[in-house]
Length: 515
Ligand code: ME8
Ligand code: MG
Image 1 (cartoon, rainbow, N blue to C red):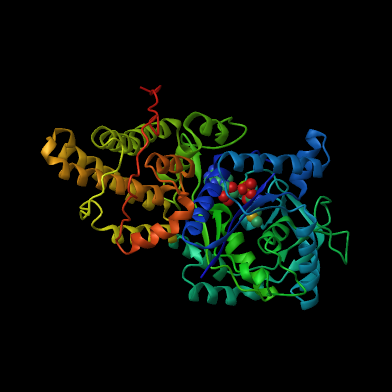
Image 2 (cartoon, rainbow, N blue to C red):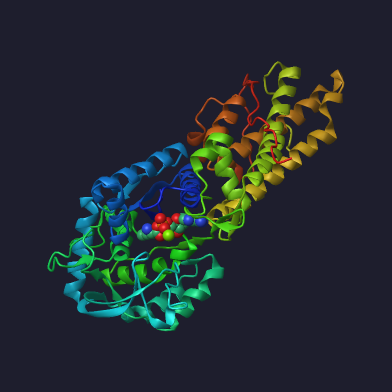
């Protein structure tokens, strides 16, 4: 039976170049997508770019390009970045695409008809940078509470979305679906916000021209957030006139919307209310991760401390960079990026632990058995709790606790390296070949298991390791069967004559320029 699994990243604004913040969310989503595929799910992994609004039109004007040429160019940079970082997305949506705009327009008209969208007058403090209105009470020192810039008093005719109507239904939904607001430490902020009262939301602009025009009133363009959020249903093929029917309903509702904590509220208040208004089922989970700073300070273009993922991937390899981002900080918490820490973990964990475990195992098998993995029907001491370990790995992946997956795997590496140190197989005499076989088969089995657990994080390196272990099948294709046996506590034996390949270390140690 194949299960469908639909997950998304935010749609990134195109007025910025992709940096580690965007890479973080997208890599996390990719890890989950790969794990789900390996477990036999049919995955639909969506990412893309958020391209409308005044800020983006202004950014285009600065470069002298038309907005469309500008957004296409930056969107292409995102695609290129995802290619470099090995992101296995299934669809990339740009909000300026006709397939998306059509859905936005049809949804708008549909909700106008049902009365959830109505016309009124809007007046408040407006921040151009954030394209948001704020009430006097929300301002901080009379400046924008989000970016600290000046705000201006604006009044305009606007369409509103009847958000206030959904206050109680939202609270009821949160109460009945404990996973919807994830991680759990974020539940209270949302519940308190909704309880404090929801105002209807202004969802059209007359001052902005780069956007989706309202069909029945083209002086208005749709507010960027109302426009952008709809990508999650436009990409999988929602047709407003048809409602929740196949093929759209095969994908929808989303299993996970992965977002940064600063946009959690948009995804857990406005978005579900929009879906309720459309009569669509709600996403199963919205997960907010934390924010990266760089060496203690907020990343910003003006400070010149924006970390370029291309550079990190070039220096340390894509896989080590992917590994590091999810290893350094518990997923959901804030973190601080430093290259020193990346180098430290690269050397200590990847080169000295994982790489070394592979290297010594392969060397011993080569030296003592001519490379052929010894097959003994011995019970594995190291993996005696394999079904329990696999259950913990499953649980960690399902909770999006990527750091736990890595920690569990890391303990296994440490344990195995320690086992080799203690057993000192190089000291065994020729009449102890049986014992040597057992030790090496055990190490081999641990490495094979690690390949499966870690390949979503380091697909390239784990394929390399898989090949070095003499495995011929494709790791991603064999993965599902292997995970099934792991769950039963069974480690499949190598095939007869399977030989390891001795070569370059998996991770070359790097000189420490900070020492
Ligand atoms: O908010 N640390 O787009 P955006 C961690 N277009 N994650 C970070 C980060 C950091 N320092 N910086 C960025 C938008 N991110 C809207 C979304 S969705 C319908 C519309 C990641 O380009 C994180 O996922 O500002 C954050 O939520 C997202 O980039 C914001 O990207
Ligand atoms: Mg932002």
